[in-house]
Amino acid sequence: MSDKKGKGIPAGTIIPWEQREKEYEKILGDKEILKSEWEKIELITNRFIYAILTDF
Amino acid sequence: MPDNMEKLYEERFKRYVTALKNGKPDRVPIRPFAAEFTSNYSGYTVQEITHQYEKAFEAVRKCAKDFQWDATVINMVYVWSGLTDHFGHVYYKMPGIELPPDTGFQYFEPPTEEETFMKEDEYDLLIESPTEFLANVWMPRISSNLVPIGQPNTYRNNMAWLKGGIAMMDYFGACGRAVEQLKTECGTASAIAGILKAPFDILADKLRGFRQVSVDIYRQPDKVEAACEALVPHMLQNARVSADPAKQVPVGLWLHRGTYFSERDYKRFFWPYLKEIIVKLWEDGIQTLWYGEGTWIKWAKYTRELPENSIVYHVDKDDIFEVHEKLGDKFCISGGIPNDVLAYGTPEDVKEIAKKVIKTVGKDGGYIMDAAAILQDDAKVENVKAMTEAVLEYGEY
Image 1 (tube, rainbow over the protein chains, first blue to last red):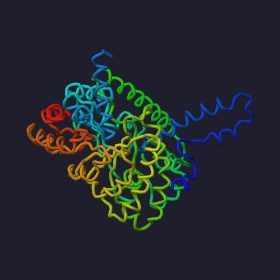
Image 2 (image 1 turned 90 degrees about the vertical axis):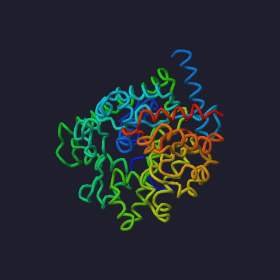
Image 3 (image 1 turned 135 degrees about the horizontal axis):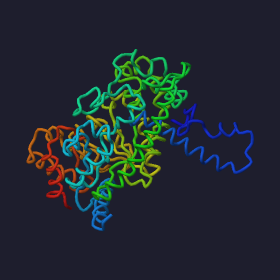
Image 4 (image 1 turned 30 degrees about the vertical axis):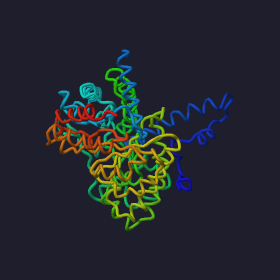
C-alpha cells in the first residue's frame, strides 16, 4: 500500500541525489564517488529528523 | 576483554538470541529494561542520569553486573536532556529543570487544538511530503529556538539546528561505545537496536495529540488513513537504518494507542500500516520487539497474521498465560512480572510469580524474564534481585 504513496521527499533522503546531480554544471570525475558520499550524509541527516520524531 | 568475560558474554548472547527465536536455550534468559531504578541503585539522582548520559550508561552497567543480567538496554532513560536542551524541545519537563531532581522526565501532549504541533487542516501537507512537513512545520513548533519558514531568521534558529545535530551524533556515538562496554565489562548483551513506531502512534503521540486525533478519525477518517500510509515508508526506513546491522537483536517497537480502539477502527487505522512495516522488516531479516504498553491480547487474531518469529511479544498488562496460549506457538514472549509486585511485594512474591511463569510460559523455551514495564524508581532492589534468583533457581532446562 505504501508504494502507491510516498510523494515528496523519498524515505531516507533530504535532498535526493537525483536533484543534486542536476545542479552540478559538470562532473569531470567519477559521479559515483559524489553520489555515495552525498547519500551517506543524507541518510544520517534524515535519521536526525526521524530520531527527533520517534526517539526524542 | 578477559577470556572469562568473553565466554560469559557468548553464553549469555547465545541464550538470549535462542529465546528470541522461540527456541530453548540452556536456561531462561533475564533481560530487564531498567530506567530510573538504575539511578536509585547506583547512587545518582535522576537528573544526573537524564542529563549526563555517561552516568546513565554506568548505572546500567552496575545493575547488569550486580544482577547478572543476560541482556539489557544501555540506557532506558532514553531522552537525553542535553540534546533536548540544546535543540529547545518544548514538550518535555525535565528533572532538575521543571521537575525535582529525583523525578523521571515527563512528556506533555498538547491538550487543545490550538496547542497542537500539527493543525487539523494540515493533513495534506504531511501526506504530500512527511519529511518536508516535519522539518518545515513540525520542528519549528516543537523547538523554542527554531523559526518557521517565512519568518525572519535568527541566530538561535541556526545554532539550534547545528547543536541538535551535533548533540545527536555525540549521543549516538557514545551509545555505540556503551554497547561495547556493556559487553566487555559486564558480559551482558545489548538487548535491542533501533526504534519503530506505529504510524498512528506518531500522529497521536507527536503530531496531533491523542485527543485531537480521536476526533479526526470521525471527522476526517480518510485523511488519517492517508497520513498513516504516507508515514509507512519513513517509519520503515528509520527502523531499518537504526536496526542491528548483524540482525541478531530486535528493533524496539513501543506501542501506545492501538489498545484503545474498537476492532473496526484498529483494523482501519492501526493494524494494516503497522503490519506492513513489521512484515517488510522481517523480509529483511529484522525482528521486532512488540512492546505493547497496556493490553493487546484482544488483537491476537491480527497479531497471528505476522510471520512466525517476526516479533518478540512483550507482555505488560495482559495475562501472560493467556498470551502464551494464544501466541506462544508463533512468537517468543517476554515480561509479565507485574511492576506493582516489584514495587510493593516481597522477594517471595516475585519468586512465586516468576516460578509459575517460567514453568508454564517458559516450559518449552521462548520466554525471556522481564518486568511487565520499564523499571522505574519504585522497584525494590531485593525484588529485582529476586527475578534473577528465580531464573537461576527455576529457569534451567
